[in-house]
Length: 101
Image (cartoon, rainbow, N blue to C red):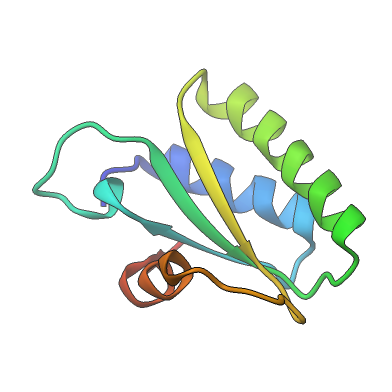
């Protein structure tokens, strides 16, 4: 995993602040692979939130907190929640290959 302890701590803290204490976060993609270089930070957040408006507000707030804590960089967030009507294949890939933070 190519994240520092500080980065991991700030990601988990921001996710819990925005999505609640029950939220889980996994790192997937190139940053999860020590053998690769560069790349954005790809996160899968799993939450118990169900109201789509609350989820959107939490995502925006989380992005802002992450940018402030980690500096300007590309951060992609997938959000899985109960009642999701459609889960593209990337969700399965992120769940299976992701590293819990």
